[in-house]
Length: 377
Ligand SMILES: Cc1cc2nc3c(=O)[nH]c(=O)nc-3n(C[C@H](O)[C@H](O)[C@H](O)COP(=O)(O)OP(=O)(O)OC[C@H]3O[C@@H](n4cnc5c(N)ncnc54)[C@H](O)[C@@H]3O)c2cc1C
Image 1: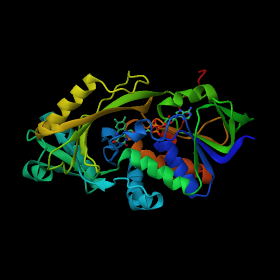
Image 2: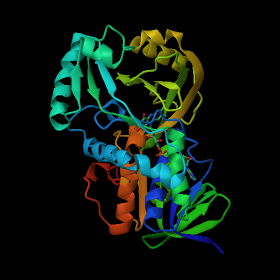
Image 3: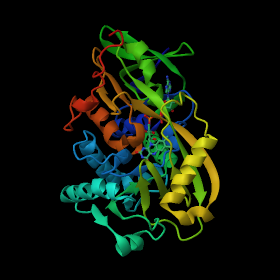
Image 4: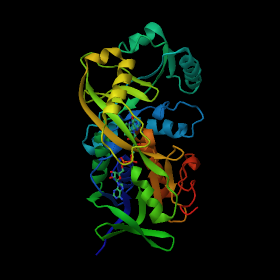
């Protein structure tokens, strides 16, 4: 007999496990199907910096992600103590400021007014220069002319996904191994998924959380899903004391000290990587140069690891969150690119709300999975 569940979630990255978390909490029987292992993709190795203002180093006020980032950041704060209790997993949550330094007059001219503008909406965001800045982060390169300072939280990526899954499992979620290769339907209504093994799993709702592999959904649904992999690499550094107080983010590169004692230096943004998740010598060089530019005293750090992951990036760089047009009870959550950890709780909460109540109070029109049209077109 075919397995059944209220909800089948495809993919056990942060989006799949987040969806399972909220729906299990609401009493649904959830089954997560994963083709490799929990958090085996970007979700298990991300830097997992959670910054409402700079999500993925975008600082524009009118960014369509701004509201989602703000609410998503607040949700992380809310769950910071609840999730470890529910799961028994220490997620390494901590709050520390993030600096966005400016090294040239042009950078100051772009960043300072933005900091002051953002300050009006979020008083914790400020602009610092000179001694005030060095006091906050003595390791920051003294060539910095100033920096925007914003609040930031962070988690340990793999542990965070594990905690979401464990908390869901304690409420009855089941995770199983298998590769989904198609959908089952009756008329417009999805009725389950089909696995490569030939098995089917029946479900009332199906949520597709397949990260950079989401393009496969085109063949299953007829919907155009232009999501592709963008490799990102990180260096893991062991830094002699004192550790960084603040994270430092500049031109998409960054340094962040994590709760496990490691400092992560990132990153690359390789749009032509395909599905190759191996780190490269070129990536290592670029990250090292940026790290030493941001904090020259890190010359004394030891490189203890180099990792790479594939971010799911959509054609317009915005996520796809919501119901799949032309189908009933089929949902997609993908394409979160550089902000998937920050936006994980809010994006998956939206999916859960759509399943539970058919609506969400958040402005999700820019993230409509139907916005790219049909695959044939
Ligand atoms: C170097 C790096 C640093 C990052 N830093 C940050 C950061 O600081 N802050 C932040 O917010 N974000 C960050 N991100 C981005 C974030 O990691 C991603 O946006 C997020 O993890 C994407 O999650 P996902 O669940 O959509 O995809 P994934 O993690 O890729 O998960 C998808 C899962 O689906 C499974 N799957 C796919 N197809 C199938 C199928 N047919 N059947 C069964 N299973 C399937 C895959 O095996 C995989 O486990 C970073 C990413 C990288 C690479």
